[in-house]
Length: 408
Image 1 (cartoon, rainbow, N blue to C red):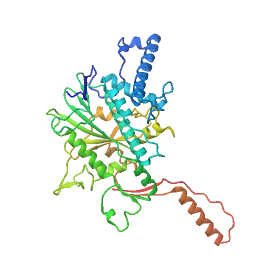
Image 2 (cartoon, helix red, strand yellow; image 1 turned 120 degrees about the horizontal axis):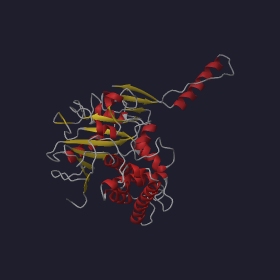
Image 3 (cartoon, helix red, strand yellow; image 1 turned 120 degrees about the vertical axis):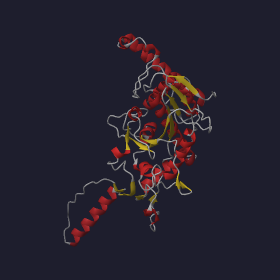
Image 4 (cartoon, rainbow, N blue to C red; image 1 turned 60 degrees about the vertical axis):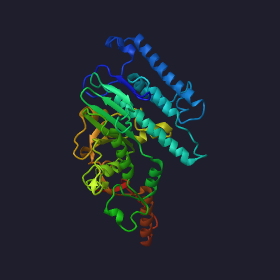
């Protein structure tokens, strides 16, 4: 095995697939020990020691230079975001020795560039950081779960046939689970989406109308095509064992952009009428059983910047209660995701959640500036009343949702 692969056998556990917190070695005394005040004090000390060791490793690797996480992992002043990150990496390290340290090293390698010096460099660095933090989230989710006894885990295993490396291999006695994690570049795209009044989430006849592409946010289907192609290369012919290949994509709250590109009935990449074809035949991505869309990008982004309050306290957990669901988009001919894995990621089938506008594949979206529309309405109403000789008026405008959509 190459030095940059890590593997370890899981201990115990039933084949439930549901998350279960890992226990420190000091917890092996059983349930009675968990309630012991002395044990509780020792456990807190162990957590603090591990967190500090990981934070010190990060500070040592960065050599005191300013980094993306230097504020969050400052000595004796770790932020709540920093503590959540360290806890996630502690869980990873506890299940797979060396994997947590590897994540720390990779985070330390992401160079910080002040926006005032190089705006493009700042954006690229921040997006790279969010991609890596998404990988931490997915690894923590998988490593913290209770898998069947005898399961092994490998971080970035090498495909013996293609040389490509998926993010995580979970090798159970009955089946291999391959996971690839992706996060698209998002800063420029979100800026364009905010500025443009129209959006085309999918390729189709509407895009061919004269003038339609001007002032319109275009589909992200090329990005998702590249993600699928990368996952296909990493999963294809990985082994002769039964396996499931899952592409996990971290997205923002506009999940319909990804569901449209993947699962729109007339052009989606995972559907029979996919626009991506070779010699007239659909490109199947046969090794990819489906895509999990994580509605989590904004949680990570906002938590890392600490500019606003994120919708959940810990950005490195997938919390089902009180949070919008994530989505499972199966490949053509595929079915439901394994119930245990679906529960881990709070991933609902697209057919189940597509009743919600934020999730359903769409042909066209028109964005309305509510404040501007309200001001225009008041001005128009005032003009009409003045023309009728009315000098004073009280006008109330109801607030409406900010998007008008047409579903496929």
